[in-house]
Length: 247
Image (cartoon, rainbow, N blue to C red; front, side, top):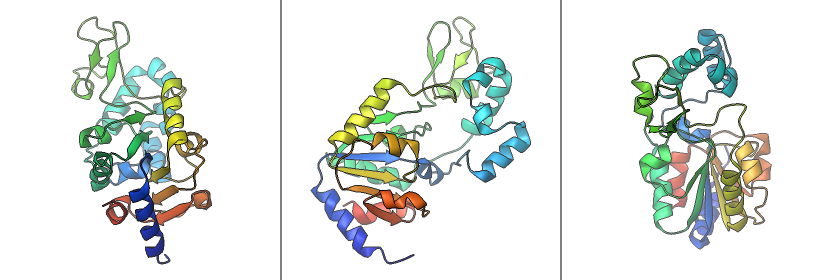
């Protein structure tokens, strides 16, 4: 890897100069917090070996509707069963937000890592594991209720109907109001900070499409052929790189 000190210094200056920063949190921020990318080749192979289905199939709205017992067996073990702790990068983003320069935080991750860190103004495009509801009466339930349910399928304690996880499932569309909020934030931004993903990420492509500035900064561990679409690129662990650019 070539020396990045010049890029790091320039990005640090730009962050200090910016007043309307949008931060995008990619799957790499989950991995640094102890999670896994379910759609990596390794995880797809492991999941298909156990459940005989791909992650896309297991996490689909159709599978939730047709094979609810199988869905929740997977969901409890592979989603709610993961022990994640917010990586230090979240504290760095919180420090930046506390300085009053963050306009919005956008993520497709649903493990509530921003919430546990105290981050605000977060657009959760794919929902959150902590917000779940009854499919009949609408009563809300925490993730613990699903995880600790006596039966495989968690049922509402009020009307005995199945609980619906609060995350976006395959086959569902992102709510228009969330996408509009994310796109509008990027349009107003004077700097976009993309963390732990690449420029091919659908979140990055669609949300930043209206960004007209020249300060789109990508910080990610691995090089990718789409790096050229960012204005500035820093390779490395996000938790290692953020302290170098955020006072």
